[in-house]
Length: 424
Ligand SMILES: NC(=O)c1ccc[n+]([C@@H]2O[C@H](COP(=O)([O-])OP(=O)(O)OC[C@H]3O[C@@H](n4cnc5c(N)ncnc54)[C@H](O)[C@@H]3O)[C@@H](O)[C@H]2O)c1
Image 1 (cartoon, helix red, strand yellow):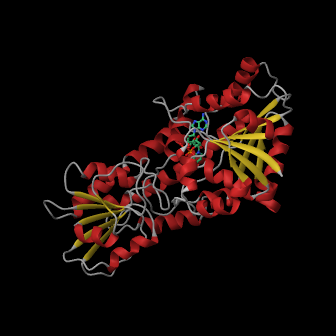
Image 2 (tube, protein in one colour):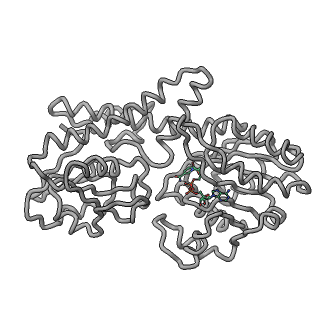
Image 3 (spheres, rainbow, N blue to C red):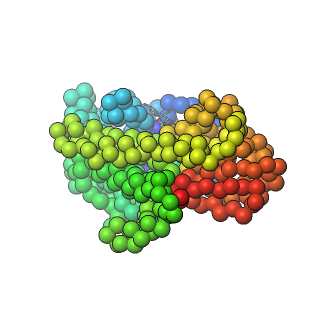
């Protein structure tokens, strides 16, 4: 059994540590935030599917470790999964990674080819700087005492377990074959026969690939929204019919070509902007990621225009159904729900509903969908969740306008006027 150390047990790190523990690894876990251990001890339910059951089943293969000396000397590899928040200039801030490297670095002198696997998303070119930093500060040699690998995950919150196990591609960057082979062995029990999905790259290629993949997906979303907007002006347009026809061409494909809201969450928007910054720093053409972001930015205005067009009341109560950026998570980063909530709360009485308590303070939050529906005159449905179909069954005492950003509702309730963004 491999013994590995996971540094950073946040939204990605905690579940990833337990995925590793479930696949033939003993995991030492370290986080500066001690609440994480307390929450596990109290068995607090986490919104992330599978997390609680994974912890329960694999707790005997996991140990919270406070002491870096013990953790490093007992393991052959560290996974660094700490935050890399975006700076004002759209670069990722690597300071938490440097903090972790400074802790590990102290105990590497007697190690042989200790793998430091960076899982956090970093700016292209960062891993080379991490190597130089460790070599200079601790008088070490890359390839001798330690090896840096880069292995970010292409996951979304609310589906991390499935996304890790079923991702189409696993990026593994290293300067050395040893690094590639080490991770090949770690991942063998996870991917079994589908080991071909592992893509072995050099460090900078892997760093670029992570943000390039997310930029391509956001490009598809912004393309979809470009088609979707046609129905705002032209009569008798169902944009989903157009997208279906376009996506039928196998050179294009159907994925991410169905009607939906703007892109949001902790990865897509910032990875796209980071790629733009990377290209312009290198004096390369960065107009594509900029255009993708620009299309995304105007989507909120479309939702507000739809409201202004269809709402007939002077003082409506506006409901935001779904504040997080997708189902099964409470994270609201740049979500359509939070953008709409912040806009409408300045103008009208605004109520929000979500299944999980949002990660930011919301003054007017309704916990029961039925009560929420009855309070509202206009409801924006902001992410896809089959539970939101219950909005149809509510016994409304007045007419209610429902604006669906995702084209997944289909109501027969006579009290409901349903408008779908993307359909004239
Ligand atoms: N959340 C996602 O959807 C997602 C997806 C792909 C990639 N990523 C990347 O993964 C990284 C982590 O993201 P996250 O969402 O899990 O962040 P997070 O903020 O939820 O968790 C990070 C954890 O690291 C801990 N931490 C900070 N500094 C530390 C240190 N020096 N030592 C030990 N622990 C420390 C924090 O206390 C926190 O618990 C980021 O680079 C992010 O871009 C995240």
